[in-house]
Length: 318
Image 1 (cartoon, helix red, strand yellow):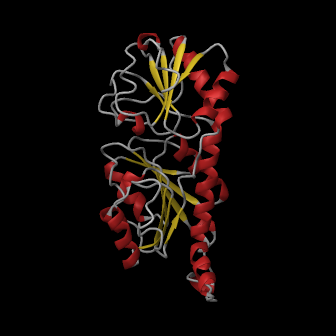
Image 2 (tube, one colour):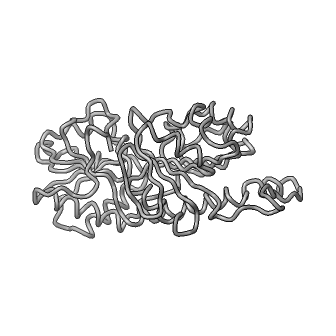
């Protein structure tokens, strides 16, 4: 069985070494150096991380493509990608746990006004941010975190926030059910979820329907002073609308981990904005050891004629 790893990430060699260590029987070739003399018709599977246009289509007998990342738009955005090929998203415990930790931490930071206190420290200002009744701030059980997207990552984050004590509401395109989480579904119910959300976490997949979803219209449906955490895709956010919402006070602040252009350009206004926290796409990083175990398991499942976890629905795009 021949597998080609097509990755433009710096970690490609690390992934290759771990794959060979975990399953020496796989004939793994790393693109492009190890594929120049390879018969394209002999390739059975492709493991991909942002492959260049046409790279996957060059292998006519591929049975499936496995993404190194949780998202698949880095694969499907290729205009030459063979639409009939099944794609398996990366679903692994390390990635899920990483997202859970990041989202809970950022929700707590927003709830406790930590970005504001960091700004105050830089300015040597002593000003307690007490906005609740009777000179107190609300505890987490009085704060609602709304989550856009209740897939594997969104559902796990919702459960963690619920267990910490937050009130949690979640929205998805189709109906979901979770104990202790108020679940909303479809366009008709999204506004009701947004209207009660103090901290909004975006974990939607990137599709044609979800591009630019974080816009002025959506921000207007949130309570004044809500906080945004975007860990979905940079393409979800209309950047000018976010800055306007922050300047007007519609939003109190935002934590952004994903951007339309990465790395974020040095002259981008997000860097210096006092109400924006920038992190360099680190909310959830696939762990090589557990990620490779997932890849090998998925390849073996495809070989047996089974459907591994995380196979993308081509109609939905996720």
